[in-house]
Length: 505
Ligand SMILES: *[C@@H]1O[C@H](CO)[C@@H](O)[C@H](O)[C@H]1NC(C)=O
Ligand SMILES: *[C@@H]1O[C@H](CO)[C@@H](O)[C@H](O)[C@H]1NC(C)=O
Ligand SMILES: *[C@@H]1O[C@H](CO)[C@@H](O)[C@H](O)[C@H]1NC(C)=O
Image (cartoon, rainbow, N blue to C red; front, top):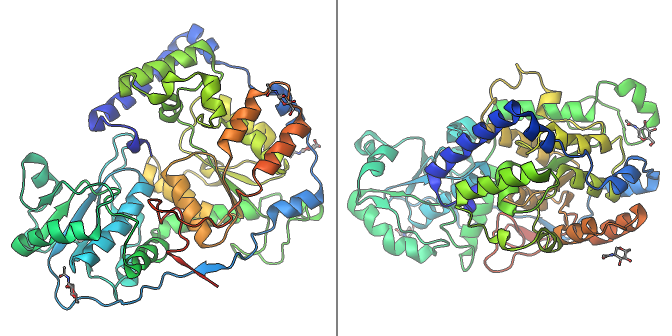
């Protein structure tokens, strides 16, 4: 996610933290800045007023919630030509940076690189991200025994290096140049690159530690069995640890069977309660993934209607983190909007969903790390969707104790709930978006991808009426609900699983 556009590494991360603390303190301490930050609740107040009073027909509702039709493709990631080499060529170790979903792709690629080299894979080590500060390990997030077992016919995996290699640690590579460290893997390296550059190291030393490793394996011109193996890792071998799945299941059950169930069951035709088993029957729900944090807001260089103080705060942030060098700052807000380069605010996402036909009884789960502007911004969305929920509203603090303050585990719960939702709306580009869009495509599940350029243009038009807005939105999203898009060269198989991970049915 933000790792992609930040060059400064740990120092920059430190600044993020310091700056956030600084501004938080400032806004509490200074009443003038506070009042400036108190922007009107709605920026698009005319549209919002109509949206709040919207009526949706039963027909619109049933069309919206109908699952995707079968599209002629089915999951297909059984790895063929599966066999473990008789003799391992050595150990492959990777250190993965980024957030949960970037690490996820790195894990899949690591399995394939080890396979290419006939090596034994050591369970990947997850680096602490400077922004999110989560030190959770692979074992803290993913079910490691399931992982090893699911891949046992493809590759040998060990949880830890044997004693003779126990010197090969992050610290060892951190302090000096070491011959067993592979530091120069190019972005999207080919299988041959690994054979030519890493095999000799394995032969000499019995171990190779590859870092950096993110995005270091090409998606193109790879043998089919290796692509299949990637799919198998991503869609079958990676399962979250039991306590994440249990919390996820509890949230899903509470979304499908809200407490006031008994009073509401008669007047809501969507609830087909016959059975109280989790994940069967019950009401439908949608998950909205919304990333609107300060980092993203600042990097976009757009104006989000928070007034002078907010624009100043974002400009300062750009200055500190990127030395002011942000491509978007060359453009006006209007230019950025019409090109679809401004992240949607919670209010704008709310208007999008209302226009698409989500009514005010929608069970909407907000998967969001931290919204810049806090409740002031979230409240605009909440007034359109009063039944909106999140981890906090659905689970007690005891239930959340194991994931509290751990960005990767929080993201894992959101991923799990997102994968079980009837409709997933991904309102922010990034690794979470890509991972969810890919995984839901694989399972043929409805996934709405906002048309950012269209929405940018519509929100710029100050005379548009609600019916005009709604008509354009519906038309502009007809083909953005999970229809299969075949992967093109250079694109990621984890975002576009067809045709590599899917077969025509
Ligand atoms: C939904 O909107 C209708 C009509 O505008 C209103 O009567 C109802 O109270 C709203 N429901 C909720 C849960 O806010
Ligand atoms: C891996 O093993 C296969 C047979 O099991 C062999 O054909 C291939 O050359 C080996 N590759 C390497 C890099 O050792
Ligand atoms: C705003 O939308 C209306 C209705 O579609 C259209 O007639 C008008 O030209 C648009 N205005 C701008 C500035 O694009």
